Image 1 (cartoon, helix red, strand yellow):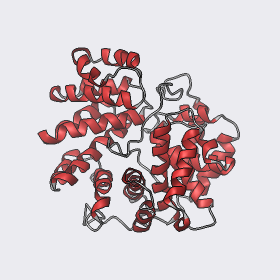
Image 2 (cartoon, rainbow, N blue to C red):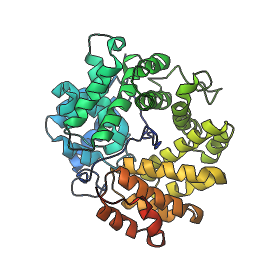
Image 3 (spheres, helix red, strand yellow):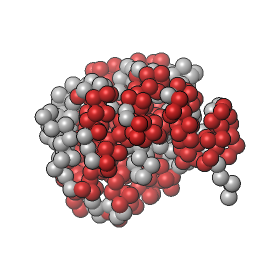
Image 4 (cartoon, rainbow, N blue to C red):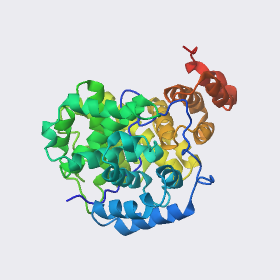
Length: 391
C-alpha cells in the first residue's frame, strides 16, 4: 500500500554526484519569486487543499485530485510557477512528486513529461514520474538491467530543452525514490536495485534517491520506514556496506535535523562523532537542508547556521548550502547572493566562490557570470574565479 509520503525539500548537493540542480543557459521561466505575476492564486489554493485533504490518505488521493483539479484545467508550467517558493504552506517537494506521478499516468511517456517540467521544488516532478513509471511495469524491477535504466534516462535527456546532464541526474535519482516506492520502503532491496547501474556515479545518484526517501518518510505516521531507529541516530548507516555510506550519512543529516526539531547545534555535534569521511558527508547534508530553512524561516536564519559548526566544517556547510539553494530556486541567484551577503565574515569569500562555481554548473555564460558576480562587490573576483573562455 502506497501512502502519501511527506517529503522534506532536502536534496543531495554533493558536487561529486547527486546535485539536483541545473538548467542550461536558457533561464528557467518558472523559477520566480512568490510575488511574481506568474503565480496563480487559484492554483495555490487548489494545491494547498489537495495537500491538506490527502495528507493522511493513500497517494492515489493526491494523484487523482491533481489530475482532476489542476492538470485538466491549467498548463503544467503555470502549475509549477504557482507552487514555487511555497514551502511555508505545504511540502512543495512532496507535492511535485505527486504531480509527476499524475502527469506520467496521463501521458505514459517519461520524455513527454520531462519536456513539460522544470526543477521547481528540488526536481520532485522528475522523481514522481519515475515512481509512476515503475509502478505501472508488470515485471519486477529485478528484470531491469543497468543498461536499460541508462537508456531510459538518456532518451529522456535528449527530448528536453533543459540541461541534459541534470535531467539525466534527476532521472537516476528518481529511480532511487521509485525503488523505495514500489518495494514499500525496503531499503536494502532498493539499494540492491541501484547496484544495477553501470557506473559508480550513476549508482551514487540512485542511492541518494533511496536514502532521501528513507530519511524523510520515516517521520510520516502513515508510512514509517523500518530502516530508522530512535535509539540509533545513525542507523541504517551503521549496518550497511561501505559503498553506500557517503550517501547514507549525507541523508541521515535529514533525519537528525527532523528528530531534533532543527536543533542545529545538536546535529553538528552528532556529525562530529563520526570518522572524517562520514563526518564530511553529514556536514554536507546539514548544508543542503538550508534551502528549506531559507524558504520556511527566511534567508537570514539560513545564513547563520553554518557558523554553528566547528571551524573545519563551516566552509563545507556553506558550499553545500549554496548548491542546495541553486536547486531550490531554479538557478536564480538573487536569494543565493543574499545568503552569502548575510553569512559570517569568514564565510563570505568561500560562499561567493561557490556561487561562481555553481553558476557555471548551471550553464551560465561568462557575461551572465560577470553580472552575477558584480553583486558580490569586494568578493567579485573570488566569485569570478570559475570563469572560463567560451569554446
